[in-house]
Length: 287
Length: 321
Image (cartoon, rainbow over all chains, first blue to last red; front, side, top):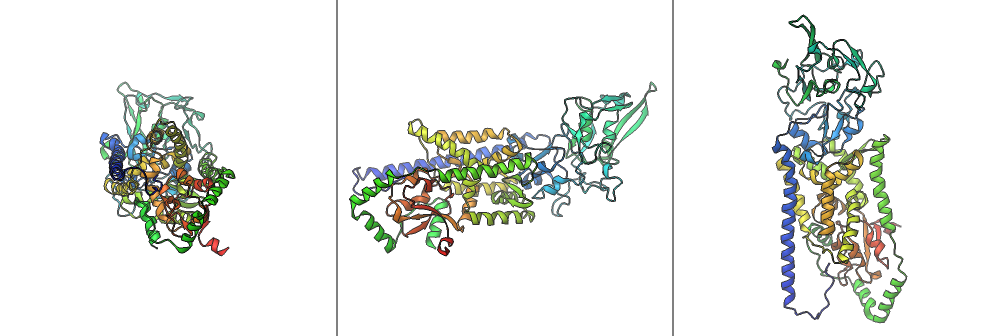
């Protein structure tokens, strides 16, 4: 803030330019320092990339991860429309994924209770999209062979979800723990009384999801991952008889699996026996 | 026209220059102002004695800023769906609105012209052309508000000689604008968005706080202890983007040299004091002058001026009336 200098000021004229030049030089160096500092800090966003952290489960219709991070405008409109509040936004420790939506399936999976994939509808940039523009590639194993049928809409004239690609694939990660594999049933609240996750139950209310804890189960042989799966023909129970003659069953993930994560959410075991591998491709040998 | 470009260059970082030609009317005014020294001193003392320290515009602005951000919050929390989304992109009763800077960076990183964004960016462009470009900064941006509070603390510490203000070159912000654009394009990530306290605060208000607030606190600490309003003055590309929009905006703060006593109260409160260079004795070339695109239209100078030499004006409208 240089006020006007009075002409004939008493300071020796020869000293002034030097001080000014020195000041200007210091200011310049400071400015360079600030630039380098801020750019350096911004590149810390690469930490999660270099860390090679497993990918987050993104909302349905998400573009491939790099395209998704680039095209997401970080506004959270997808968060606002989700009827089960499945979508959360990345924090600063997600680096460039700050403000980018993801789903923690174990806490709250996407159960498609909105019927029309509202988050895609809400996205202003097309980072979540029904139909990818031709210029964007579809990664191997991501396309769905046929439109997924939503069990809840099975009797509607248009029973399919407008989804072309999966967001992940379910995998029986701990077959040794799976209740059905031991021939065990399940009775009670799937995730205990403290669990806050919600789900739409067609026999309760088609339009209003309720807490999972308010909907206890009673199964002779646990098959929650199969019955609660919102997609038709995405998982089945394969029965078999053990060496000791017990009737057992094994959940088998099928090609129609879109990776919504409901199976992971409802699995009563801790940790879940069945999990979603985000962005994983469909592989025949998985089955 | 040359003043338009001078102001634009000033926004990019050039130092203000003395006018080459001062209009005759201004020369008359200046002669008249100082010909009778006694009268001039009397006028000054009179103005001081009757000064009515006002926070009118600041209070109005804080109310608007809080209201806009609160509307985002309640739209989600109470599910009234009036203003959905965050400051980067939103829907106002269904109409798309997209922040210009965010839209630019998304397209640079994605390397696609996203047609979906056109309507929203155009709406926002028109809105801020009407309302003064950088008025986004002072009337809407939540970081501006917390930074204003940090500034108060900073000035208090400066007064007590506990800290000093370290200025940077204002051109640094232009360098950042270019660098962030290049980084978005080269890395394919919206790099600026990771740091932007505007987006972070907006999302924290609507979707709940997170670790990112730690970064915002560091920025504020830097501003309190080291450099006054550093982020807004020297870094934020959003400000420069809206500044460009504001260069064609009819809403401005107008300076009227005749009323001015050249004491500089306005420059002391200003976020971008270089726009008030015209208020220095001998710098005004016309009787009334707009402050230019970098002015955030915050009105602190309007509040501070004891003689109403600075006023809000809508260009063209005052002539019509």
